[in-house]
Length: 390
Image 1 (tube, helix red, strand yellow):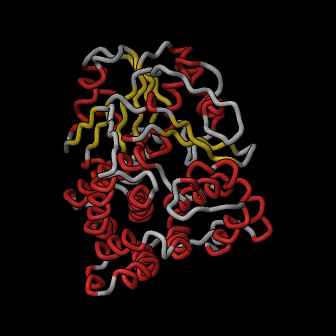
Image 2 (tube, rainbow, N blue to C red):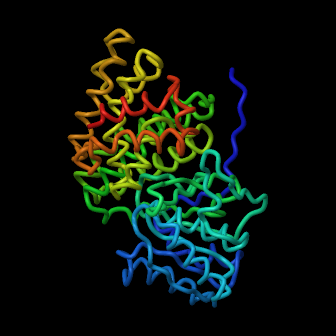
């Protein structure tokens, strides 16, 4: 068996209704909260429950709603200034991946100083990598997709440079993640579909990564099984609390998997596309994943065949190579059923931008490319894959 280490240095609190105990969870960490919330939740009953639980325990709070998809480095730096000015000693995030990634960066930079962009991993650039934690951080995911509550990553967008890069540091894990399936039932079908696809792609890429271990394989395959059994139900019947709970668990498992094994080519392409066009992250990885699999085969045949069998049990009677070859079509059909049908072209990437886009992928996402089971040797190979995604 392959040697491996597994670490999940946070508390996962998975319970229907857990949100009502937010004050209880925060109290051991501090007396004044910097509360970062997705703006569409402003004035909601959810926020009222959270702030009410703070008030009941005498916990002060400052609310912050300036969060956008593909979170900006400038917005995060402004939030850090507010944390310091307000003397907040704990950060709480309520929202999707953008809110939680922003909060991970804010909690870290508030202690260590400078701009958040200085902490992002970029090939050939000087990067700050502190060796101690930031402010205490508690997060409440309101979507089932990013799994960021269980990763040491915080993805940040720099529109001025046209780059989307990540802080990668084991010290930015949240202290506590409250996963309450009850707050997921109100999410609209399109968002539900996009985040579900992101969950699947996390699990798939961790599973095929060269850094996959027996631990990652177990976690990733369970995430894929939960996605296969529950994604469509969540999209079509969003009030199904049990299906929502299982997709929430799948999302967290996907985050745990990429925390140990990383992501591969589909994310290396999807991240910068989101930075360039503000396309939704789940959509960008959906647009690339079937084509990346076609390009990768026959490398990884056994794993692709196994995933195909989970998604479409009717293929289990086929030979392994044929079952693996069916996976791209299975995925395209499934994504279409979920309503996720965009391409790189429809998201706004133009043919004349491909070479520059490939250069960005090659230089800024080389770490992700290096995790892929089929080696990519040049920027030109990246450009060829991008053309497939049109």
